[in-house]
Image (cartoon, rainbow, N blue to C red; front, top):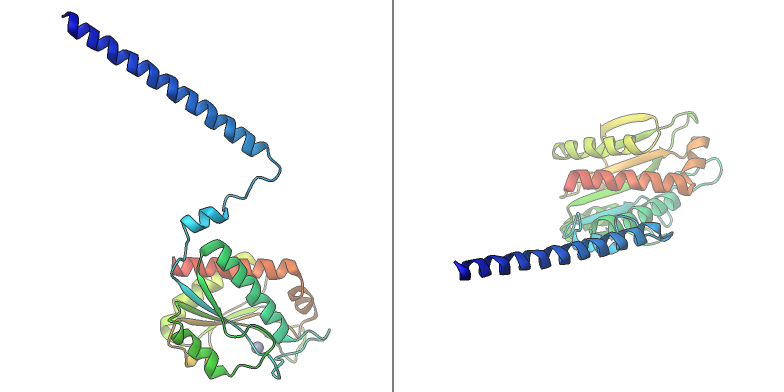
Length: 234
Ligand SMILES: [Zn+2]
C-alpha cells in the first residue's frame, strides 16, 4: 500500500513538471509569434527555405522559348515594340517565378537577342528530357482593333494541357478570349514533349502593345502561366 502510494505521487509529480514545461514552451512560442507578426519586414509565407523543403516541381524540367530573336524581329508594333524583345522579357519573368515558387529546372532556348533555328528550339525539349515546352509569342493582324490571347497546341495529346493553361491565363489576366486552337507550328509539330505556343496579345493593337510593355502586365501574365504549369504538372 505504502509503496504503491509513493509511486502514484511520484507519477503525479512528473505530470506537474511536464505541464509546467509545456506551459513555458507555449508561452515562448506565442511570444515569438507576436514578435514575428509585429515586424515590418516579416518574410512572405513562401520563404526560400519553405520552397526548398517542399518544392512543388522539384525534378521537373521546363523549356521556355522566347519567340524570334536576332535577325528575326517577329512582329513590330505601331509604337515600335519588337516582338522578339517582349517575348524574351516574358520568358525571363516566367523563369524567375518558376524557380522561386516551384524549384523546377528551367532551360531557355535563347538567353539573349540571338537567332536560334526553329528545329533547334523544338529539339531542346527532347534533349533536356523536359516535362513541358512553352513557346511565347505576341500576335499581329492587319486590322488594328483585333486583340486577345490564343493558346495553340499541335498533338492531340496536348489538348488537356492547352485547356489547363488557357484557363489559367484567362483567370489571371483581363483579356479577350480567342480560345484554344490547333496550330501547325514547327516548334509544336516537331516536339517530342508536351508543348504549347502562347500568343499573349496583339502587338498590332495599340492598347495591347502599350500593356505588354508594362511591368504589371508582365508580372500578371507570367504569374498566370506559372499557375497553369503548376496545375498541369503537380
Ligand atoms: Zn511570333
